[in-house]
Image (cartoon, rainbow, N blue to C red; front, side, top):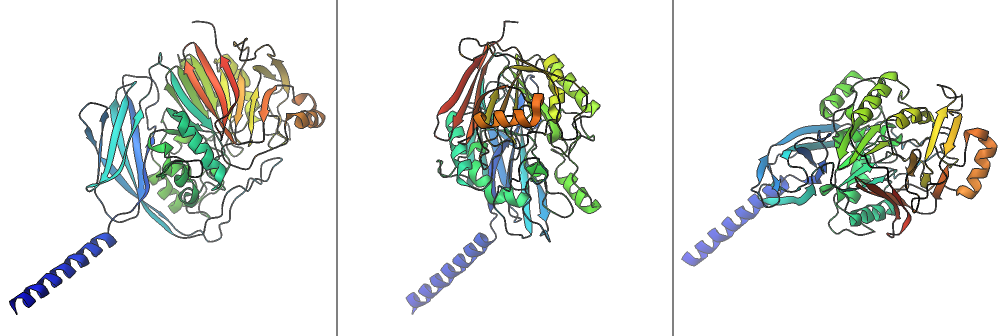
Length: 506
């Protein structure tokens, strides 16, 4: 009888334990996007660097701890701050294609079912990081490890740096995963995403559907899966037309780029060149409260790393890129930089040999500014292939574009530079790196050079040195004070363009 009673008590206690455990499991917080690295406000060379960790969960309460420190040193604790992100279901939202751009109607991207969305977004600032160092971090939810990884801090001006540049990325299809995996194999210290980061319209739901699963939340990296790049590689965002295609109040989760990326905040600040988020006082108030670390800073900013200075602007047709105040900031920023190499990055190519988007030449008018300020290379996306110009100089014949969006002028082309024997360019090299995952644009140079000359006359010139339209690809730059190596690499790892750029000693 006694044994029977004890057995019954044991079974009751076991059932109670299982019930409590099931309740705890049912109420446990779910990590939806693992911690990923962001540049934060570490921009210009100083005595130290700073980075930001971000991640997303459902709206169940949980306690996170974040420890970080230079490899071999005692760790420090960072505070994790939380904000709720709530998005209503869009009533009549449909995937938005690039129907306003000339020569193309790009509807890349998978359609995502409409539903309400509710998240907690966490951020933890990692401060006082020494330059030229490896920093390890651990993020735990209670006693469970959520992510453990490491990253390199900003390199000092005399040190080399390796980084990737690629645009037109996430459509939810296989090519983006193969490119992400191949980029991870190259081990970049940072990445510049050259616009159109998520298709078709840059919504939060589209990030959740087919962005994070390629570049961040990947358990087993591979060409069919992608790679957890963002665990250790900060992505610097450039705005593309698809990133800002949706607006408030019609699309409650519009402008996802501003919720997820935190760039340096050293740009010109608010102005008519910024992305206009839409209308509706309640929607705009909620948006600005949740994006205080990113809006409008993503539209224009700059940063240093190693011997390189990178300047980013918003070149979308919806922005007022011709504003004199924006140009004044660009001139101040570039002239103030003492970096050995200067890069300008934006979405729309000024000098392309593709029919698609050819007449979107707003940034051609910036070429004299870039030349005067010592820019060495310009990187863009928007056109879904790879192109590299010869070093060129261009003087616009008018301060305004024609009715078709074109900017005419006088070209000076350096046909001596070959990147092999003759490595000192006379002019700026413009690179299109828009083959990161979206559907490719053809045909190749042999056909387009003839038709563009026929259709546009002297507005087009023989400035394209390399054009590859049949494969997805990205660019890797290895920069040292005395030289820069540029490689265009496809998803198999083949470098189909490989040049060296040098300049006279200071």
